[in-house]
Image (cartoon, rainbow, N blue to C red; front, side, top):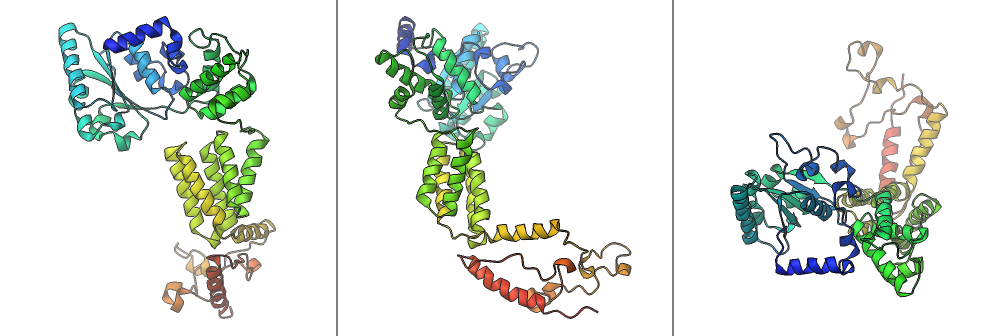
Length: 453
């Protein structure tokens, strides 16, 4: 990197007093092998390995990359490792403060460095989604001609936030939220490492579990919370970070919730039963408990989709549309914003009219099938398109409903064994009352049919 006078002074201070830098900064890996998580991006021969000079020989040089992932998954960390490991000129810019002028200055410097000293330049551009189209356009010649190797980081979907020409000239690398095992290793390393807490305090299991919950796959958040808890413990002269001390330090109470145990299923069950019972406030309470405990938002969305059909059904057919839309939105945006989407869906479902008629209908039909009440398909409904079907009587006397007044043909559709069975028994709740009236008229028309010879 090319620090200015103030950056150099800050780095000198950090060397003299390591605690002047946040724990998350002090614990940044120095090599790619030290990086926690993202193993799918760190295999031998990967673009990031080639950026630091591993396997970079031959006619193919390292490619520019766009790192896309949620906050705290290691985008800046990976760029930092490249800056430490490569012998290339490394320049860092933030799209929050930089503009076209700064980009052009870097490109001019890169061309001079390459032409005069044969030294390539790596440009790390953080928050690239904040650059306008014109600002991103200014990067194109440098990337295309490889005057710079670009490492761009973004938390936004690059297919919407990065211009297509720049995407086509770069490799898109997707970072995933850190797993609990990744975070656990990161926390334990920070506790014992001299760059971190140096073993000054211990991390009990219950406190560690709470850190994992509040981190939500974000390594930076986990280390920031750990530092706050350690500071509180050391101020009290404690030898370990008690759960109560961590709660006070981060102002977030530990939620009794085991994502792999009874609490996971009990709270999820209580959420759905509260929705079914139309208690919107209780439903929101259980939703909040699941969110605060770090539950997978996709799991919550799936349960709401099931409830939309199981508990609401035809009383409000739009409930399923709402739940499906919420699931799609949650998959796209993730936490923390997904909490708002889940709240909206929960409120809509809790306040919707309720009907389990769809559940009872398919259950009754399945029970008859399992009991052997199936039987052959009536001849006039059988496929009559293949050769020889007419000789078998298939399709004979079939009445095409679209040719008849009202579009309903009075003919038998069910097999003899279940003819006349009424599986769907609509309620008079919400929109289903209208369907009940329609169904009554339809069934009368269907029953008005000539006797079979």
